[in-house]
Image (cartoon, rainbow, N blue to C red):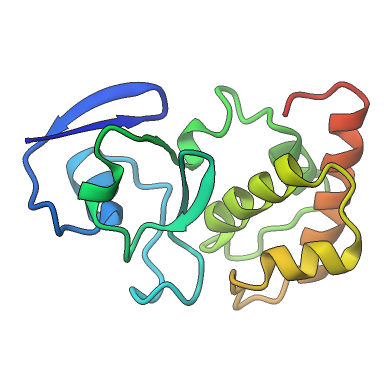
Length: 156
């Protein structure tokens, strides 16, 4: 049994220590917001936070997460009221939506580490996340808007 703390809840899972965290989250815990994209950490659809760091859950062994703090898209905010989620809706960022949970999780780490990112900062931080629909410009606008909202006292 492996003990995990996911979105501030403790879980005991019966999984091989080598099982990818993605499959534990999706198949064993039912947290399906984190998506499978490529399986080789190249697309970013499976991005979650592990102790505040953006990691690709498709290649992160569940044993690495034991006793650590994992946050998935479901745990980014209680009511979808994180500034990024609000800005994502305002700028109508998702097209198909498949990559968006990973995009949001990467953007959340960016804004935590850099409250006033430039376009280049955003492009650099988000370069590991692929959007087949090409909504990169709307994502950039939404990240700038979320940064502004955080500065004005919005939730971080």
